[in-house]
Image 1: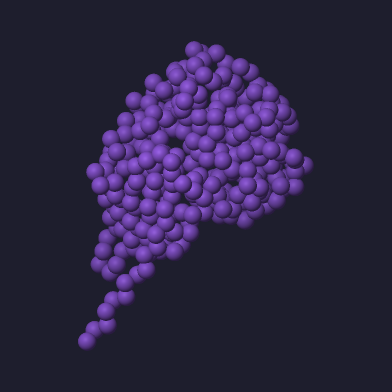
Image 2: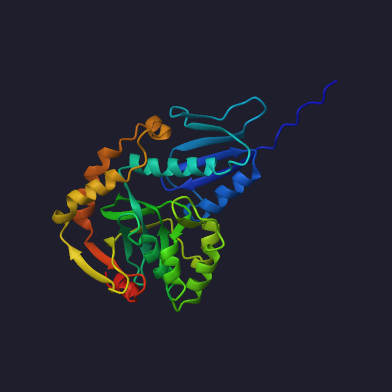
Amino acid sequence: MKDKEKTPNIIKKSFIFPGVNVNLETCDPSAADLCREYFDDYTQPACTVPFPTWAIRDRVCGLGQEPAYCADGTQREITILRREGENKKAMRQIRDLVMLTDVQRGMAIFKGGAVVNNRGKGIVLIGEEGAGKTSLILESMLAGESEYRFVTNSHVGVGMDGGRVIAHGYPMGIGVRMEPLCAMSIKESQSYRSLASAIKQESLGEDGRYYLDPSEIRPYFGGRVVAQAPVDAIVIVKNTPLGSGTVKRTIEPDKIRAWLEEYYTGHSTWDGNDLATTLGVNISAQVGSIDRILEKCPLHEIAYDITGGGVVELLDDL
């Protein structure tokens, strides 16, 4: 008599986000732990509003099986069949689901980040690749006696909530290029030097960045992480030659409106995304929300010189 195949233990985790609830089922403890590490700062303990609930089933391929993916928008179910060791797939599906749910609710997802400054003002940071958005966020968070709060890096959801603009954060690894690392190492902050040393221990990614997961970066932020924040200003970050100093100026919305729309659509990553198709999400339809955002938020430009000082004070003055 053949021994019965051992049925793997199913681990169940629930995550309550602003806008959607997710029930994860996985047989991989490392996948469950990774999701917890990524989402702990972005979930809430209880749901007072009846948000939609999705089930995500994360399974490892058995003998003879091929990886597969299936999303059922009617039943609100996502099934992932993946290779052993690919434990980030469930986390990425949950993150995509949260972001696309925000788009469904009228938010625009920008390539960028957000922080809350020392005066409690929420600031959204956008800008082209390599402009210094991540470096600026790290400098503001790690400055001596900083009370800045981290909302998000890489992508930020911006939209209206009760008559004012709000930013939503999405947990992602923080990637830093080598050039800013060299500048970080000469900063007076011990936190800066410690982080720079830690990042250099990581493997260099294909895009020329060193990446740290949220669990690795969280200790440097001292618990100053929030899932969302009201927005008081939008800042376009632009790179400037080293040694030229950091400069801020205010921009009239009508002079930047076309660029902002092109920036928004040009950095969208949802074209051809299976989940976006399942949810019927139309990214282009959210372009109209940009006008409503600009009506409520002042727009600034910062030419950022990472080797100089004073950027935290500039952000505090917004």
